[in-house]
Length: 177
Image (cartoon, rainbow, N blue to C red):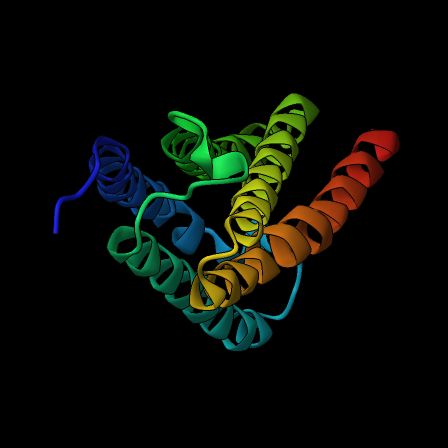
């Protein structure tokens, strides 16, 4: 089975970008009490582990499915380097979130909260576009399920729930100053 250039590039992006995301999360795990805005630490552990398993499992299911299926012939992901570009932006934004969020906690400057929030929204948009492109290609129900699970974390949990809590707490603190 010959792997296309797009798939080789995507694989490289996932390997390098995935390691970058994992590395950037080290400070996040070291600052759980400040990065989680007073959410109970035990609740964070209970909540966080299953979400990470769903996100990683869903994304891996999607990506493995993507590697073994032929390149999409229709829809968003059939255009040139759309797939590797979306993956690169998604992983870069995911890495940026942890960097900006840790800077926000250390400096208490709202600009870093805004940048962290923006990176979560960009990650969510890329996730949605990957899911939409997979649905449009109409080739992989397993890929759709995998990306759907991934989107539960990147869109609902990160893009909406965490973002709402972060924005509320940031600007509540700013208005008190």
